[in-house]
Length: 207
Length: 207
DNA sequence: CCTGTAGGTGTACGGCATACGCTTAAGACG
DNA sequence: CGTCTTAAGCGTATGCCGTACACCTACAGG
Image (cartoon, rainbow over all chains, first blue to last red; front, side, top):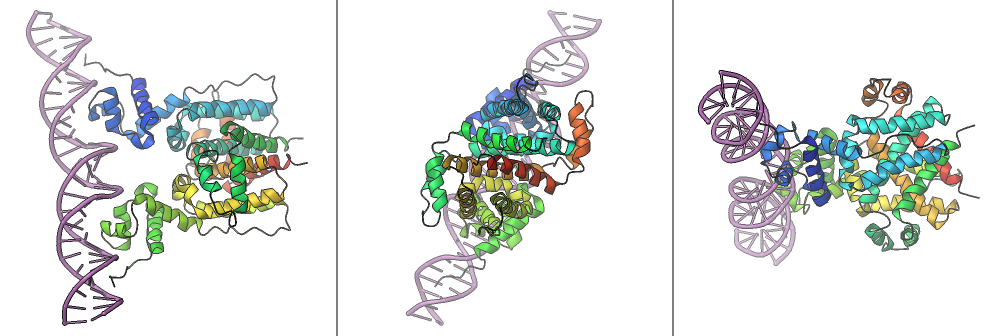
């Protein structure tokens, strides 16, 4: 009976994500999204209650692309966890601006819960105790979230490294030395290296 | 010759921190800080160029309380790293609102650089290679930053756990099971557990 | 006491989220 | 085909925000 909507919710979320990818999270505003979809600012409010809800749709759009099905069980479990971690990093890394949104809205994302479900499943198969699973899931999340943020907010291998390399070597001997080597470690190796350490620590708890 | 300032920069930063502790990072505004110090909004600009600089002063105030001197060397190096990590967590955890600021301004904080200098020093004494030190420092930072954020933005042991425990057990069997046990792991144990795993992984790289 | 300088203030502008009320497009029904 | 109903979409206004700019003024040096 009434006038039909001219936009799907997915189109709206996609427009908001486009704004973020293009102008960063700081560029995200109801006005900018409205312009992106070619509507007035207030028209957006026919689709979402407020900005917060728009953000939720954006992260659901992004995380919706993460494959949450368990990897094949013919590999050792740390490798399977690594696959799960990389799936998140690959998707989220393509949209670094949304990282703060994911942290803020994380407990409301069914997609992330499903990812966690799969991860805990792998940890259970691996034989970890209840307590070890709690700590394992949390520390994986903490590491992944922290690593993605640091990577996309001035990576150590990047312009930040230059600033560190320029530190007075007398006051910061180790840091200026480390910065020299940091350039030779790319971000993939860095992420993988830290994750491997974390997993190795979890493994060594086992009998 | 001119009129003297009626505020020290430290007093200003402290006022801003008070606002953050009281109303969260979202409550931080030039107007709010001005009211806190009993001055007009624009008076703040006699002390800082812009909001960004005010934020830098806040994190320097917070991180300034972190002891960056190397711990006594009579303990094994992973314990010394743990001491360093706990020093940051204790201070920053008391002001969770500033965590996003620390991430944003981290490469400009001399205090955090000094902390890193000490940590890398310990890793060097431990015998890690250049490459391992780069990865070690970065993964420690990533873990600490991520863990503090998760902890103060809906901890798994806390109200967020209830939401997870209420998930349909048929769809999320592992998560609802894990949530039941999560309540018995307090945040200190959680942080310590993940850190221990990470350090164990780094240790096992050694000969 | 006078005066130059910098500290502090008031006002104003453009941008933000969003409440509210209006106009209008278009499917449903006669 | 005409009309009616209902939500879609829009314009305006309010109260936040950071901050530019012009102004007044307290005070240390002379």
